[in-house]
Length: 493
Ligand code: MLC
Ligand code: AMP
Image (cartoon, rainbow, N blue to C red; front, side, top):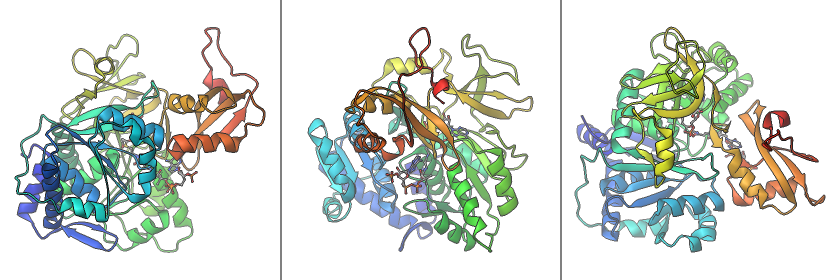
C-alpha cells in the first residue's frame, strides 16, 4: 500500500497515464499532465534550495496549480502550510510567522495584503504569484527524483482557529492523510469511475483532504470550481456527468432554494455528502424530497480529518454523524472525570487512530492538553452515542461559531475589536442564521458615541477575514457578568 498521497497518486499515474484527472474552467488535465506540472514545481523548489521539512505556504484559491504545487512540495519533502484566501493581515502575520514559511505561492490580487505584513516576516524569503512570475520560477528545471516512503514525516500544517485567539498549526503526517482517505474510500465505495463536482475550497480539510485526496488516490476525476455558486452547481448537476458532490450545509440549503425556481431536477448522483457543520434534519428531509436522495452526513475536524460517517449502505440517520470510520476509534467521556460513558449519555467525544494528527506546531502544552495519557484526542465536541453506535453532536466544549462551514473563535474577533477606537468592551457570540447555520454577533460598550456599526465592520474587515465580521451588532450600556466577572454570553443571545 502507498504510504503517502503522493505515492498513491504517482501509482495511479503509472497505471492510467492518460486518464482524466482534473477539469477546471477550459482546462483538462490527465494524470500525466498533473504529475508533470507537479514535477516542475518539485524540480524548481529543489533548485531554489528548499530543504526537507521546510514550510511553503499556499495562499491560493482553487486551481490545478494549487494541487500541482501541493504535490510538488511533497516531492521534495517540504511541508505545506495552508492559508485561507479570505485571511487578512492579523491571520496572515500569525500563520506565516508561526509556520516559518520560507516561500509563499499566491495570486496577484492577494499580493497587497501579503505585502502589508511582509516586514514582520523575516523568514519569508520569497513570494511567487501565479502567472508570469510562477512560469519563470518553474523554468529552473533540474533533474530530480521525487521523495517517496515518507509516511512518518510532516506533510501539512493546517491552522485551526484557537480558543486563545491565536490559531494553532495542526501537524498532519503523510501517514495521517493516507490512512484516513483509504478508510474513507473503502467506506464510500470511491473508484476510478467516479467524477466529483468539487466546489469546496482546497485550503481546508473538506475540499483538500476529502475531495482532492480521494480523487487522486482513487485514480478518479474531479471538476474543480473556483467557488461554489448554487446556480452553476445546479446547472452542472443537470448535465448528469457527476457521480458525487460534497458540500457544507449552507450549500445544500442554497441548492434547495435554487430548485424552487427550476422545473428540471437533476438525475440521482451516486453520493451527496455533507459535513463541516451540522446538517439540520429539515434540510436532510427536504433534500430527499426534492432531489430524491439521502445526503450522507459525516463529521470531521482539521486535527483528525474525517472521524465518523453515516453508512454508505444502511440507514443514514438525520441529525446524527453516523459511526467511526473503519480502523478508527471513538468514545464519549465525562467532561470532568474523563471516564467513558454508556450509550445515551452526554459527554465529550474523543477519537483515536492513525488519522489523528501529531500535535500542534511549537505548542507542546496545548498538544499535551488535547490528548489523554492513552492517546485519545479530545475533540471539544459534545454529544452521545446511541445503543446501536450512531453518534450525535449536540454542543461544543469549545467556544466556537461555525458559519457556512468556517470556524470563528469569538476570542479572536474580540481581540481585534478591543483595538478598535471607541470600543470600551466587547463580547462576540453566535446566533442562528438560516443561510449560514450560525452568524457572528457582537455586543459592544462604547466610549465614543460616534462609533457606528459601519465603523466596527470596516475595522474588522481590514484586520480579519471578512466572514468573521459581526453581522449583527448591539450597542449596550454594560455587558452582563456573573459574580466572578465572567461575561454571560447566553444572556446576550
Ligand atoms: C463568505 N462569507 C461568509 C461566509 N462565506 N460569511 C459568513 N460565513 C461564511 N462561511 C461572506 C464574505 O466574507 C463576503 O462578505 C460575502 O459573504 C460574499 O463572499 P462569497 O465568497 O461570495 O461568499 P459565498 O459564495 O456566499 O460563500 C458561502 C460558502 C463559503 C458557503 C460557499 O463560505 C464556503 O465555501 N464555505 C465552505 C467552508 C469549508 O470548506 N469548510 C470546511 C472546513 S474543514 P463581504 O462583506 O466581504 O462581501 C472542516 C472539517 C470538516 O471543517 O469536518 O470538514
Ligand atoms: P475545523 O476545525 O474547521 O476542522 O472544524 C471542525 C469542527 O466542525 C468539529 O470540531 C465540529 O465541531 C464541526 N463539525 C464538522 N462536521 C460536523 C458535522 N457533520 N456536524 C456537526 N459539527 C461538525
